[in-house]
Amino acid sequence: MAEETVTISRREYDSLIHDAHELSVLEAAGVDNSSAADYAYTLRREMPCPCRSCAEERE
Image 1: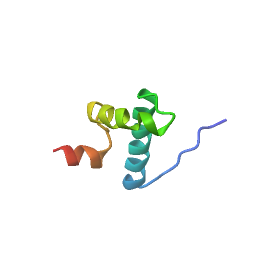
Image 2: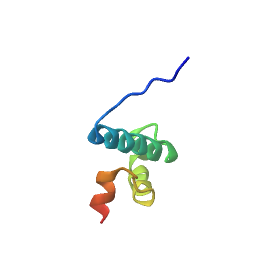
Image 3: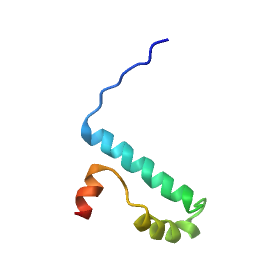
């Protein structure tokens, strides 16, 4: 079976990358409740998001 190709806008792509990164940070912090959210936000600074809009904000 051939693999399908899907075309999306750069904005949508960046949004998906950003959301996936946010989830990765929460999972890395072990967040399964709101009490671990503070640690997740600390970890977020240590694990910068690779999406274009976040990279531009850091520059």
